[in-house]
Length: 439
Image 1 (tube, rainbow, N blue to C red):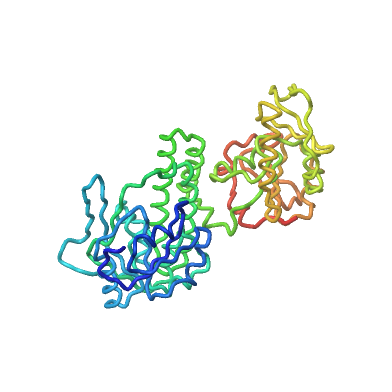
Image 2 (tube, rainbow, N blue to C red):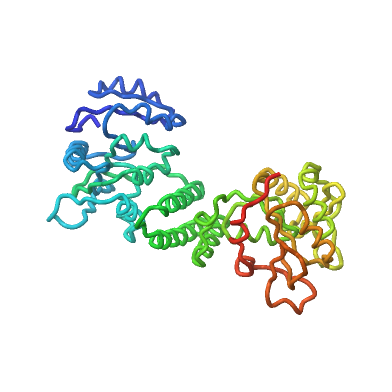
């Protein structure tokens, strides 16, 4: 920063360190003013800026001495909202430059949509160039237009609010190898969530090629699933893999649903399978278990009351003759919960309590079916409960059952068959789009 040929600058340091940044900067006798803010105060940054332009840098990286001057002259001459150039990687003392388009031109003017599309380019170097917040110059007015202020999603929101951008055929930033990077397991969820938010934000823009963005998103999912698997993170790899399978089928929940924080109250494993096949975290304790029809009706009719009851288990695992399985049996008041896919009482209790805390009481979905000898009477009782969006899966049509969804090809069976692939059995997204219930 001190070596920059453009001197009229002010530096704001977002302090993520335990070091005494203020005293260090004073000892260096720098030629520019420094303000220091805490990492948690980043949202206040727009109120602190006094200059006409702003750039973002990582303390891990470096700059060419003329970076600021080149970008400043470019943004003044072009009257653009954004200026960016190409970059270099500095590895073991060697610079690797990535120029585009040869040496026969100096600048290229781009619309905001063109810049956003380059974030999904097939070349990973171009993606890095346009996705990174660092080493670009922005009109500071853009920052004041942004309501959701988050360092992780700031770059594309600055692009969205810009009208024009100028690309200069010149290196403006130097990336150095990241030291002590977070394990992928700790970062991939945020990366994918930001990716999904970006596509959703951009989908409303005129001339934005969303199919191109979806295609690159699918490729990113495949990459993350493979990388996590190579790191031995098999559970996380499986979560991303199911997101990938859903996306390849054309299912993009982040684009189709207003809310992704839904809680499914299912009488059996179908609810848990829906979360798994969409690659979502379980926001319900009703996973890997089943509840018989009469008990499920009582549970849903007085749902909040029963969920406030203590979960009590039989002292010994049970083994009903009709299941040939051994598992814990729990009770919520007078309701029996069969924890079919749990090997111990401790496991069942721990996961129930952990997932119970994730229930979204403002977005509840109730799912029932005609398995386990559910009578027509109990189906009608379920249908008449005062919830706006119930789902009753059945193998044959019932008269006057408003909430029913008939699964074809099972009419010859006495009841609905075991469902191992709900995503390909009925239209899950159509059901979720209707919205949940609030209690």
